[in-house]
Image 1: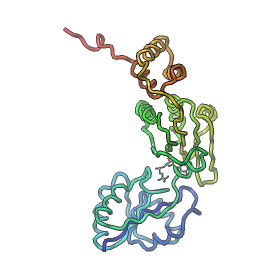
Image 2 (image 1 turned 90 degrees about the vertical axis):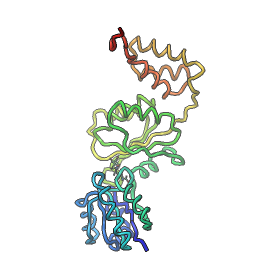
Image 3 (image 1 turned 120 degrees about the horizontal axis):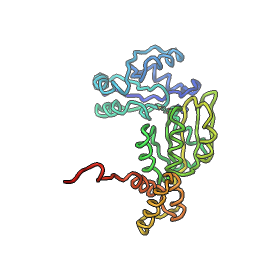
Image 4 (image 1 turned 60 degrees about the vertical axis):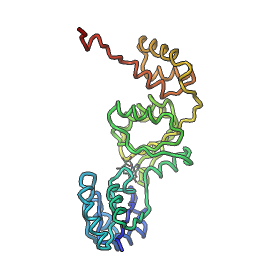
Length: 289
Ligand code: SAM
């Protein structure tokens, strides 16, 4: 009989969220694979549990797969934990779970907090259909490109973001999505838990001079605009975009003006405006002989 892999969710700030099932699981397993053993030892000390631990993080996860095979064959059990919250959700563990399944181990998820879901249910935004995108790319061009892909998403979107990148991400969001309803969930389950709800433009101006500290989740309302696709009047729209670019308008202004005038999708206008912004001047870059 192969062993078991317990995927154990742990608190994201409030130790009172530890369930008795988490404690019982730590007590019964033969080994704990922890993202950072220095973090998990504090949890074990709090629970009064002593257990063998080995680190398993994004840089060594692959080298831990042999342990799973070995423990599975010996019919032993392993608990997988990350520093906080639910393992595998913007955290390591995917390869471990995959290996345990390949070894026919029992997979047992032990429920607990997840920042994204807590933010979603308190956001006031629709929870019936949603999409989790985790951390978006940090490079500005990649960030905006990913946002442009998400712009027409009708479901509520959940993002994770570091405090020092929060404003930059909100500004990119406002540029690509327009003035959407969002909710910022800060320091969930902790003493300074806070929710800021409203239009993204209002939240940007509120936060512009604030010191941004702590952990944040961004929840964004889906696109419910009934806008048509560009194809019927593409050349007319393209000409209007080119004219505005020549007049020195910003991408944000162009997207706002053109989507309102032609009632077409923002993501299409955004992509077109970017494409026309810096056309490659072949005569300058290549010499044809
Ligand atoms: N696995 C975790 C989970 O289940 O939520 C997420 C881990 S991810 C590396 C860390 C990110 O989650 C943070 O940058 C922040 O965006 C979000 N997060 C974690 N704890 C949070 C909290 N207490 N309040 C708000 N956001 C939190």
